[in-house]
Every structure is written in structure tokens, then in C-alpha cells.
Amino acid sequence: MPATSERDADLPAADATGAGQSLASQSDRALVAAVLANTPGAFERLVREYQGLCWHIIQRMVRHPEDTRELCQETFLRVHRCLHQYRHESALKSWIGQVAYSMAKRHLERRRIPLIEASGDDDGSSLLDRVTDGFDLEAASADEQVVGRLHGAIEALPPLQRTILTLYHLDEVPIGEIAAITGLAEGTIKSHLFRSRAKLRERLQDHLGVSP
Image (cartoon, rainbow, N blue to C red; front, side, top):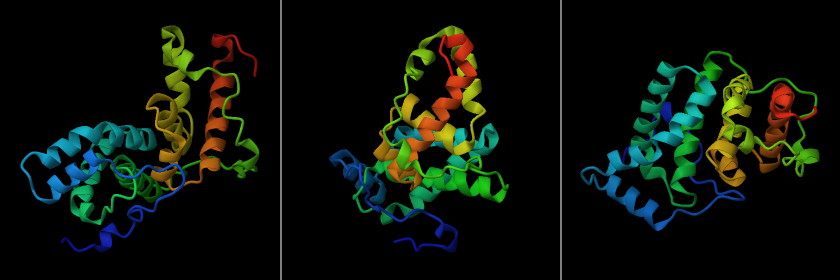
């Protein structure tokens, strides 16, 4: 088995199962076993299956195509090197997402780019039930007249909020899986969703016919 290097010390703990995380499926187990057995084409299949998820996480975090491409490559190299640490206690998608998120977060930290805006209210508990606020983001995404403004507004969000918003609303990743990927509590995820939706609502109110 490959040894864990100092370079991998910042990897998320393998399979720290939390609320909302799913156990590995039979297909996850079969794919991991095939990769570890060096079955021809197995790792390429893993990359094809999860490269979209990695790209979305990293691109939303770093917003630079060349950096995203390099970080995606590094993510899958690290997945290949550390796959023996995967213990099937969470979905393979969540585990690979954790690695991608860790790579992007480390990249931003090296460049001293903050993940979130400073806020006086960091307690998500008061916002747990306020994710649904009357703003139909999915309908806005389907309206060609506002989709450009919507994506522009999403890009203006801080890295963590635009990543969470994209995973939840556009990639339809459940809050429990987002919590597994980011290592944040579900209440904190809901708080970020509420705040980011509020910002989008404010930016798009003139085009969507909604009040702030």
C-alpha cells in the first residue's frame, strides 16, 4: 500500500461519517476494488464519472480555468494515491468531493483569498428553516433573459457561498453530502444558502419582479 506522505496531511479524514452521508454503494465498492486491483480502464472510468463534480467544486472556488485544470489533475492524482484509505463509510462521490474541496481551499489559502465575507452573524442556527424564502432560483435559471445576470451574480459571491449554491441548486447535491464534502455543519450550510440566495434576490429583483 502507498504510504501517506506529508503532502497528503491536509486530506480530509477518510470516511468520517456524518449526518446525511450515505454509505458506499455496491457500484462504489466494485469500482474502488477494480482501481486498487489495477484493472485496465478502471481508474479512467472513475475519472470520467467524477470529473464533472471536481470541476464544479474547484472552478467555483478558484474561478481560473488554468488553475482549475491543474487542481483537478492534482485531485485525481491524490485520489489514486490515497484510494486505499477509503473505507466505504461514505459515498465515493462525497469522499472524492472532499479531496477536490480540500485542494481548492488550500489553493485559496496560499493566495490569501478569504472563503467567506466577514459577518457579524456566524451562527446558522437561527436560519435553519429559512432556506426557502420565496425566491425561485430554479425558475430564474430556466429564464434565458435573466440567466446571464444570474450567473454573474453567483460569480460575485464569496468562494464558499457560490460553491455551496452551485452544488445544492444546480448540481442537486443534498445538504448532507455538501456537509460531508466541505466538513461544515448542516446548519452552517443552510445559513450560507440563505445568505447567498438573499444576495441573488437583491441583485435580480428588478428582473424577476420581486421585492428585497
